[in-house]
Length: 337
Image 1 (cartoon, rainbow, N blue to C red):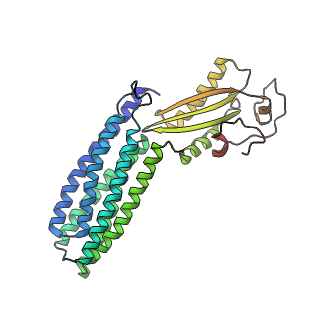
Image 2: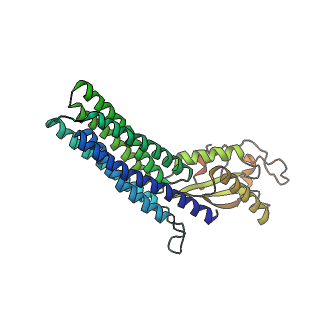
Image 3: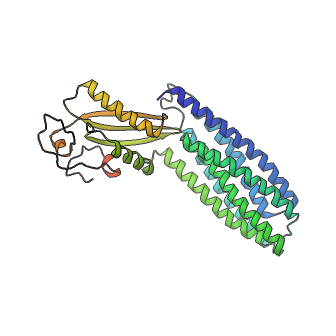
């Protein structure tokens, strides 16, 4: 994988996150103005979550700055893990904001107050919601494209803010028409639950990345792609592992090829294997493929037609799956497929 390509992607991520931070600061100011005008607990809820947006935005910006640094002697795999730490902090902050909102909402139920200038509040909050959704959508899409968990976390955070804003607008509209002020706090409690759930999901994903937890969805997609495009000289793949380092995927596995291949022929098959995966998963991917020679028991599952040294007839092709590609065991007919 060209180092220059990765650095360009990292700089692109950093630029998007700068816009996320600027947006968070501007929208926070607008929401504070909206709260000052309306004195609504629901609007205060939105403003409190925006403080988290601002803090998390700067943390995400710093993490992407670190992640964009080139590899060095102390960090041979790069600095991509910083993104997972950033997302973990952001998830924790979002969850904390949810509990603070519940506290404020319960206080509002015990000590109800009149909500003022609802029409102005709806307009201002509506503007912030629309901007949040657009910036959040761009951030999530760019994060998925560049395998950046920090950008995805920032984008999902902004989108969750949009959903809570919609709820607040509905609550303010109901208060405006019904004059039932306790609805302000009731809606805030519901929205706080959504916010806590979003924070938990972000935190869970980031911890999984820090602990190098197997991404079964990604592995399943990779295995399915290999099954559909496998060559006859690829008798077997095993010991398959995928580790994420920020925007980089590190994939390593063992590839079984005919035992009589010389080094050049085996290397040609490994190159074909690597190029196939990069074609589907992009250049921000590193592959380490170890070649194994086929053994006698491989004949029963080998689909190679022009093999002159076959000792056993072909019986059955073993379909690769999440279950049989991860163990470091060469496949044979006794292995469950």
